Length: 202
Image (cartoon, rainbow, N blue to C red; front, side):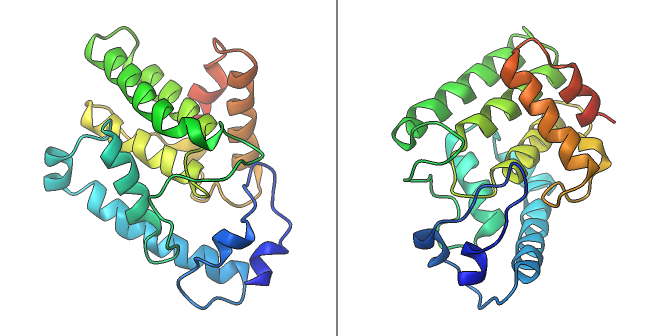
């Protein structure tokens, strides 16, 4: 497990803490293996999430669903999958605030969508951005926030976002750089949605 703790993490990635690394399920010796295990797990979660029966019977703006989706995305890799983080990070709110802030964000997103106070894409991109800022889980927050935004988009009659057509926004590269820059632009100015919108629909 030391390989996880000693990695150089790329910009925007949350380093894994020793107590979290102890919760790793498979025996892994390289970061590439970890990424592969997670990718397979996420693919299975995606199949579940976009299945017609799941889409009809589940609400992506429900707090239980937020945790269930993360659990399904990482349940074969991390014992803490689907559990809100308990420790302070280099990003995100105080962990004690997560249980209040997630329902508040979900209620806001539901209001925007049901009352059409914002266009669907804008509502979901603002939801996505604020979810990444809360950073509710120990890891996997960006991947989780992108998938739940995609699920909600389909639920509300839109196409999934393309996210710069980046197949893997975890790895360093142009797509990840543009994605992080767009999130930071919105951090600096809550009205500056253009970069994130252009990226998410490019």
